[in-house]
Image (tube, rainbow over all chains, first blue to last red; front, side, top):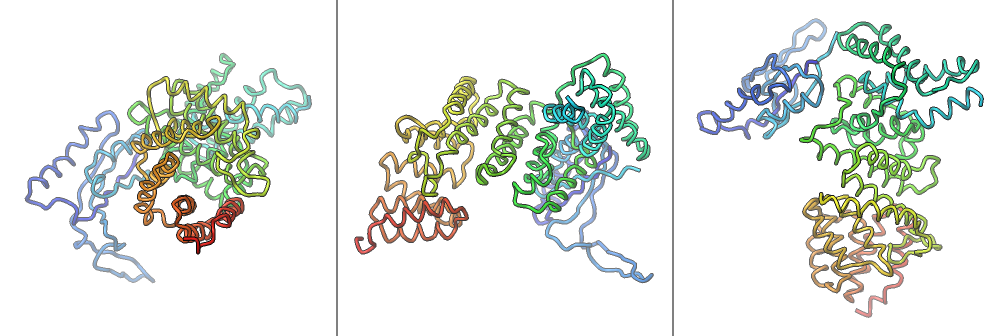
Length: 115
Length: 404
């Protein structure tokens, strides 16, 4: 079964780019797969550019409304995602626990709709 | 025996096992319940021509077929195809295996999964494992029936949609997951204890049933035995906890002749066994505290204080600190107990037992005016008539404030 792991964190709490802490932090993202071998399979994933770059769009009465910024104003921003294949929720949660964002913010685990 | 009686009997004794066997294979509690319901309906028709030798196996086989029909009706997603394959193999194997495997431990771990909120865990466990009806559960939790119905269906839907596994956690996750299960059982117990035995399905009895089941399915687990012992000790005092005047009584003031000696003996047996395993945990310590409170002829306060200190290693909470302070006061350390309560005042300002204990300790220290104020605060916070009667009596027994 596929699960989407949505990574939410307060950017102020994340290490600053250019510091050794930041490099170690990023390195941890790249090794999640190795640390979860046999638990779940990585399908896709990426980090997102900061929330300041977000544009939200909706169609109302056929007209486009675009807004500067994210859909919801919160302290913790959606900063990245993983799409994984896991046998069940426990395996997906075990994978999520290896993502460094889990320590600083929140990883939301959502099953992907099956058709 | 009529077919209705046979069905009744079979469902009363085997419902939990049947739902567990179905749910763990289907990965879906709702579908398991529906299939069993449909199987029961056809049992009423078929059994009138003769009750099968193994009614439980008959029901399980019929429910499997109903489930397969249901899955066919609902379409052919990948998940359903998997369930179908498992079901077909299982159904074929049923004839060779008259004993239904007991999957209730898996079912309990699914119902008490940390991905469900705590109240849903208790409701779902009562519904699915104990077979309580939605109206019965709603009454126990003082909810309306539609609200409880929604809560139950949301929880069942999440188990299916998020694929919460029907599996027994591995050694790495076992302590935390077992703790979640025991907390769920204990919440069921305390909800029943607070409500009193007026309900048709007594939640204390259900929680004890579940703890016994857990102990039977997973023997040699010290914390399960500890939790069961704790419930038995507490339940043993049930008839004595409210005096003839309707006021609640602390264990030390209760009429011991009203305590249930069988429950106490079983509690001691379990606790001794648990302690011999040398795997200490909070439930064993709480059970030991309950046993010390019931020591003959009076509570063993030094031991209780020592046990609370040990409990702090597992649960360093303000409530445990409060209880330890009360035990310390009973062993003659009134000033340090009062100092500890001062430290806790801000953390427990809305906790009724804090103010009740504070009132009692202040009275003992001769601070009558402060004691009055503490009892007033406790009375304002209490929701139980029996506790209100106890606090009212304690306040009325204080000397006149002018005596300060």
